[in-house]
Image (cartoon, rainbow, N blue to C red; front, side, top):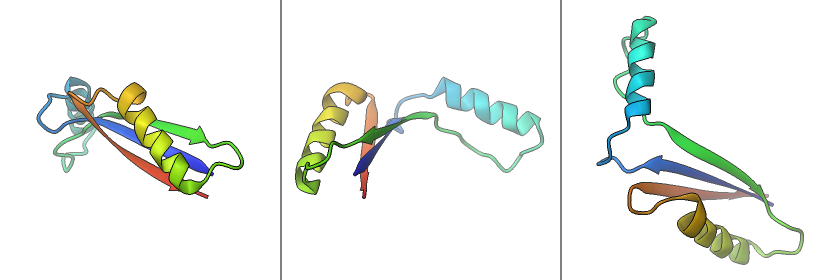
Length: 81
């Protein structure tokens, strides 16, 4: 089983790196790009024998406590077989 954790700044937090990317894309002719939010992606392999429920619980805790700063970031957890 694998988990993917996506971490992004909350919409209320300014994203200067995302704005720089948007500006660069507009400069390259991609005028339809109105906004870009930059984030992080973590792909995590889960050990054999761990149940789906336990993996979900553990990865949620890991995301909240270690991978994301819940004050300024939000995250999603996806489990795949």
